[in-house]
Image 1 (cartoon, helix red, strand yellow):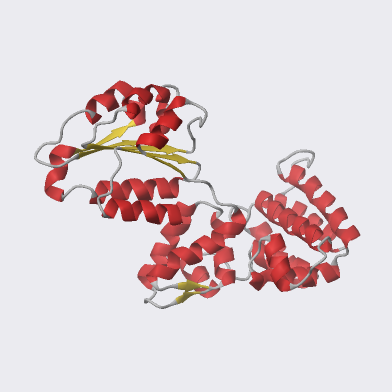
Image 2: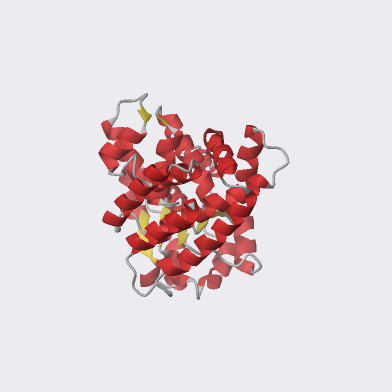
Length: 334
C-alpha cells in the first residue's frame, strides 16, 4: 500500500515514467493505479486526441508500439493504456525493443492481471531500468481485515474487528468486492461512523449471529446448543453457506490451535503475532485451547481433512451437505 501511495504521489507531481507495467494476482491496485493515470495525467481537453485505451485480446505488440511512438497533439504528452494485457502473455517479450528506448512523450500503461512476467528475462530487467514495474500481490486472509481498516481510516470511518471478519469470511480476499461493499456503506453512514456487525447484517445481508465466525467461536467454547443452531441455519441456506468454506475455515482454526499449543510464550501479544490474528480474537484461542487439548486437536484436524474430501463429493454417496455438517459437528464436539 505504501508503494501505491508513492506511485500516486509521483504521478500527481508529474514525476512520470514512460512505461508503467502493472502486474500480479490482485487486480484491485492495478485498476486503481491505471484509473488514476487515466483520470489525472492529461487535462480533459487533451484527452480526445492524446489518450487511447487498447485491449490485449484485440491488438498485437506491434500495434501497441505503433501507437506509443506517435507524437502528442497540442499537449505535452499522450497516454496509452493496454487493459487485459495478460492476453498478450505469449508475445509480451517482444516489447523489450520499445522498452529499451521508450517514447519520452508517451505514458504507456499495461494492466497485466492475474499473471506476472518472468523476472529472469530481458523485458523485466529492461522495464526496471526505464519504467515502473509494480507487482500487486494477493493478500493472505489474515491480512485483509487490517487492509479494510487502513482503507477506511483516511475516509474517517472505523470498523469493529467482528464486522471486518464477517466481510472477510463472506467475500474472501477479493479486495474489489470488499471495497465495493465498503463504498456502499459509506454512502449510507455519516462520516465518523463505525461499521458494526449490525450494519453489515442490515445492509449487506450477512447474518451477524449465523456465520462461520460465530460457529468457530461456539465450537471453541464447546457451546453445543449455539453451534447446532448455526449448523441448522447453514443446512437450510446451503447456497449462502457452502460446506467447503465452513470446513476450510474450521481447518484453519484448529491448525492455528495446534500451533497455539506448541507456543512457549502464550501472552496475548505473542499469540497474536505467532498466529497472525487480531489481538481482539486471542481470548477465543485461549478458551478453545482449554476445551481442546493438543491430542484432541490433532484428531479433529484429521476429521476435518476427511470431511473436506466428503464436502467435494468424494465418498459421501450424495449425502446432503447439511447432514454432513451435522455429522462433522458431532465428531468435533464428542
